[in-house]
Image (cartoon, rainbow, N blue to C red):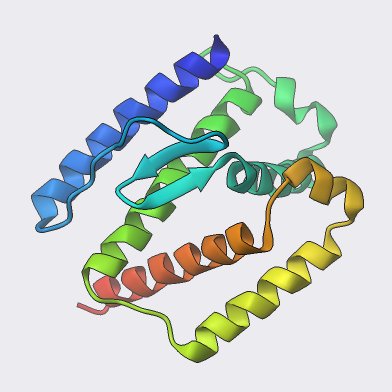
Length: 166
């Protein structure tokens, strides 16, 4: 049942984000029904998979535990939630923003060069070979999903650069 609350929260957030983008011009953001197995959400043709979320979750977990210790996840916040709840919400928001920005970049005609695509392929391979067998099993992420994640991140970064230079 906890996942149901997370999904409802995600839908509310995406709808609010869609309203913001709709006010900005031609970008249409719509949620689609009928998610395939392993998909958390879809905005137009941008999909966020469970494997992508696990990747960010694993990396954030490692960072937080190195900085604050393993007990950080049960720390209570002022609103009564835990740090784990807070980070889950932050991760969800980040993934929605990432996919939305990548979609907006595509709608503005931003594309990646052949050199950037080559670098994405190399970075994906390097990352996947560096995480270890146990982490790879946990992540369940394919080379293709990893490359798409890097691609979305690069597109979002290029959009942010373009907007900030206006």
